[in-house]
Image (cartoon, rainbow, N blue to C red; front, side, top):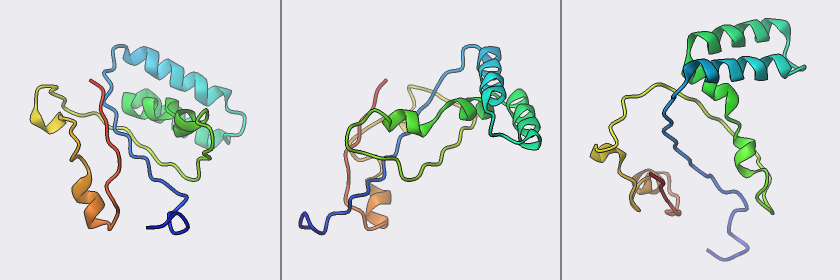
Length: 122
């Protein structure tokens, strides 16, 4: 593909596994973030407060902002983002959690996309 044909858009896939060491701290931080947002209607605020109080994964989703991941990267502008969080069973020794260069290539090929760069931190 020539430079003129190359898309200006890049899908960056990031998968994080976080260990919640203090559920109350996460929940309280999410409640503070919700309370500090003046643009949230009261009905949405009540629903969000209930959700983050009942589910730490939901509280975490309120605290993580994809814009923060790329806001200081020069030459890029976030066009679209979606994210979710869910509790999982995690065994760092399981081969299911190995990061390798082939992760995602099957999906990319099925979508007709070229393979991209992958990496992992343990």
